[in-house]
Amino acid sequence: MSDDHHITEVAGTGVPIPGDDVDTDRILPARFMKEVTFDNMADYLFYDARRNDDGELGDHPLDRFDGANVAVANANFGCGSSREHAPQAMMRWGIDGIVGESYAEIFRDNCRSLGIPAATADHETVVALQEWIEANPDGEVEIDVAAETVTYGDTTVDVAIDDAMQEALVDGIWDTTTLMYANMSKVERTAADLPYVGSDG
Image 1: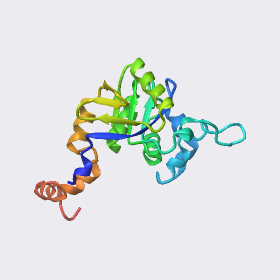
Image 2: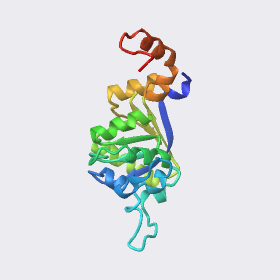
Image 3: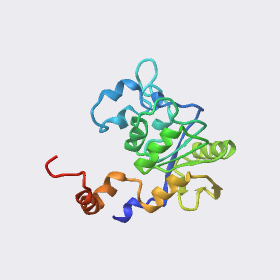
Image 4: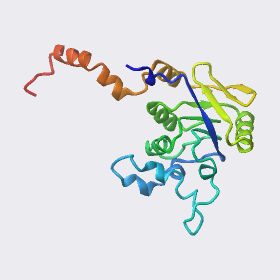
């Protein structure tokens, strides 16, 4: 497998997404889930939260920090229903990594399967980073997945990355579909050796 599946760090500009308990329905409103592909999900990210009563885009962080690829969230981010559409929409908008106080477990697992590191840090650390991004919209934020640190400006802070996520990202085994195709010959050999897998169905 190529090295681009090994995710050891993510760097770029940041976007603060303040507030605790930001649920998947806020991240990706349910009415957009009827689409059969994820192709347009970026357009629907925080769709309602980004618009005023007239449907015009307001001053939501995603509009003020357009082009950012590191999201910084607070506690229990991605709670609510287990829809994969929420992290899919974030990825397709351009988010490559997240730093947050905590995540809903299923949301975090969905991030892992998309190759998006979701690092955790305490409240003070996250708020300080959000405030720094507000003051330095063009400043670089770097998540070092292997070292479990986040660096911004002259500051480096320790963060935590779930062991299973860290291993999957660093070892390049998060993309299970690609992994399966890369090992297809082994899969086929194993299947051929199984007595209950017959060619006649």
